[in-house]
Image (cartoon, rainbow, N blue to C red; front, side):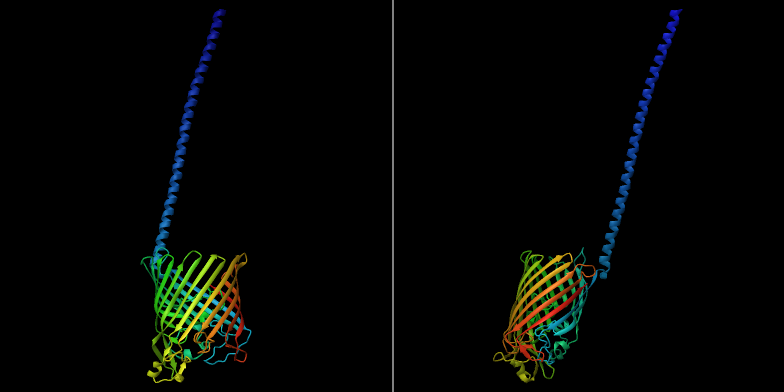
Length: 481
């Protein structure tokens, strides 16, 4: 019995162990299956999430592309549909105080220059003046995407400076009274600008604009000085006609004009001329400029107020200069200019039954057997300019030296007709342009100028030409927008 009882117990034990092992095995398989099932389920979730993110990004990109296309379409419509969309309004306002240490008195006679000798821009000897107020409205010919098209440029000028550069509009009293008495306003520029797709681009101006002669062509912002040199006083001032500009090679810019010239030097010039200007960038630091105007016919004003034309003699004015800028802070300029006046042939007097005494303007001087006022003028100017930007703004200094030779006394304003005159002009200018808010477009200039001549041509306080030299101080404030 014992052995049977023990056998039953052992059998029960073995049966229980077998059942436990079987259960454990089944559970492992279930756990494994569940693990595999859980793993497959996680991978599927990852795939679904990534796909959703990609679709979301693609949708954003599509929206961005649609917005870009819309902006481009809108810009294109504005460029092509709205001609006045890129008009610019620009302006320059200049005021100054000038003091001449000789305190010259104005004579108020047509034969004498009123004020500061050869000054064409700051002629007032003592006091404040509004030199120039320029308002410009312009539109470029094309757009950034298409530079070709039709634009325009109009500049209205007011103030003391424009009286010297003002154009002749047919009133002969314009020449027989001092230029200080001229109305202080003029249309300085008024032209249509056409850019054609010819080669590298042909730029055409039709209308009135500044002459391009000389380094100091009228531009108060670009000019480093308060005043203009003696050479500028002899240059023709404005031209009206057709001007073509083309780059035959990238470094060479050529301008050819056929136009009428106004308010040029003596004698009166008002007939078609040819203008040619060349600008060649030899290197990134060195540029050469040169050109000429040829063809000005001579006029004179009779005591009866009538204009008499001389078609026989032509005039010539040319220049050449070099500009060296080794770095943004330094510039060196050397400028040479030459003027040849054809004069007035005495046959004009004979054909019209006139004598020299019956000519009110200019003062006729016999320069050859059959010619009056045939003249030769030439001069040289040198500039040293330095500028540097500091945290508080830009400070600049300019030294200008000019020598001018007027062989027959016909070009410079203080010249005595028929007398050979030589002039020396030394100028030192300091300029400051603040970097502070609301003052970035303002420039202050302080200039000291010394002029001398080989004759006593400058006025004293009694209005008499008793000085061969004079000194002036000029303070200028210039604002541009």
